[in-house]
Image 1 (tube, protein in one colour):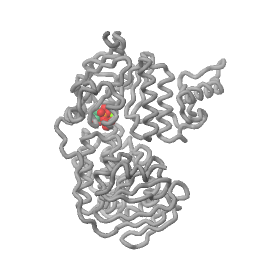
Image 2 (cartoon, helix red, strand yellow):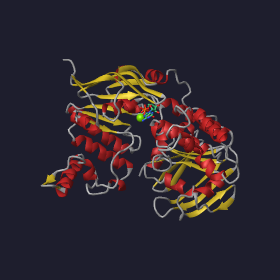
Image 3 (tube, rainbow, N blue to C red):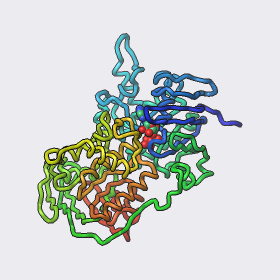
Image 4 (cartoon, rainbow, N blue to C red):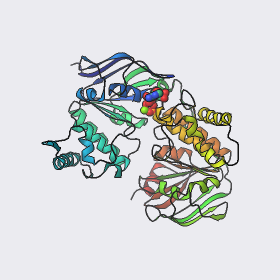
Amino acid sequence: MEPKVLLKMKNIHKSFPGVHALKSVDFELRAGEVHAILGENGAGKSTLIKVLGGIYTPDEGEIYIEGKKVEIKDVVTAQKCGIAIIHQELVLVPYMTVGENIFLGREPMKGKFVDRKKLHEEAQKLLDAYGMDIDARTMVGKLTIAKQQMVEIIKAISCQSKILVMDEPTSSISDKEVSFLFNTMRTLTAKGVGIIYISHKMSELDEICDRVTVMRDGSYIATEVVKETTKDRLISMMVGRDLKNYYTRDYANQGEVILKCENISDNHMVKGASFELRKGEILGFAGLVGAGRSELMKCIFGLTKNYTGDIYLDGKKVNIKSPTEAMRHGIALVPEDRKHEGLYLIQSVKFNTTIEVLKEFIKFIHVNKNKEEEITQRYIDMMATKTPSTKQLVGKLSGGNQQKIMIGRWLATSPKILILDEPTRGVDVGAKSEIYAIINKLAKEGMSIILISSELPEIINMSDRVYVMRDGKVMGCLGHEEVTQEKIMKLAAR
Ligand SMILES: Nc1ncnc2c1ncn2[C@@H]1O[C@H](COP(=O)(O)OP(=O)(O)OP(=O)(O)O)[C@@H](O)[C@H]1O
Ligand SMILES: [Mg+2]
């Protein structure tokens, strides 16, 4: 029997000023399948999804739902067509409760008023039915990103959608939540729902996806059955070439200790952590979500003011009370949550790249426009960032390219110590490989790098030494000759 086709997109075109984001893209989704879309940062994945969701009108092309041609001119029409989308950037309303978000726009009424009691009861039933440990009356803004993601999923499920789209749903959630998400997805496909799944994690393909469509530079490349293809084949279709040395790492003799932290606590997540960083070293920090890695770095970068314990830079005890001071000491931190901790989405690429350098040096140097342009261009080239110009608003770049801008901004401060918190999250395989090469080069030139990552292969292949944290403490340190996934997990797990 022919599988039932839920959705067909044909010859879709979409342009933005200076960018031809979609060039004749075809896509098909069947009932009961999980269909992945693969492509580099800026390939057009999210744009295709936004066309489907009625957020963008295509310049050309047709969309068919179960064989019938439809005109998806807005978000409401998309919902009526049975399409639910979990976008890459979460769109929940932070100052409303979980329940209110789930039923937004279709609240149960009692006469003229919203029946808030019923609304929260219904929402709680849904949350409980899917085993989610979330109270329907909590304000969404108080939840972790992972939990907000779960609320988005429940919201999508509760609309009884036939077509569910997930744009990088696992980029910020823990392993446990990922397996939970996959189970939920399997329950849905068994009921005949079709799921479109976008992710940069190649390992997830085998685990959850049936077919995969590859896009490159806004064009459709191919659709393959996951079981019948290989990772290498998909990667070369994605990046248009073979990726040979995925990780670049030249181990060298390390210099002297440049940063030493003793018994650091923040009265919250960090509980007496100690470690040492050497000149020219890449120091990995592994651990489960919540182990306190990001919080420890926040103490060092002056974001957490009332920490206890001692920090020594070049053997001298320092008391870092603000990020400005940390920067004066040559420390830079690229945070994990780029949207909330740093990017100015309605400002240009240039503004976002140069803001930290200018903030620090504006008193000393005469800022000339050419210099600004030159710095920005240098980091666009270095990171291979895809943007039509230095004037483009950062909010209009694809997710992965926003991440590159953030890394560029901190590199521009020429730090001695660079702290990278999940630097490759949401970044495509080609760009990841480029970032590894850049980190390696910087370390070779004498920069000391702290690499926090949840991707163990990344930590293992890039680090000179790996510290493993658990419950706010450093549990052990593994050298690059001895480190393995098993050894890390043994130290990381409770
Ligand atoms: N609203 C917009 N205005 C201008 N350009 C845009 C807009 N939205 C997307 N683009 C551009 O269209 C191209 C495709 O972007 P899109 O977000 O679809 O990429 P993506 O494949 O989802 O990438 P990522 O993996 O980084 O999320 C990019 O060059 C991006 O800069
Ligand atoms: Mg995207």
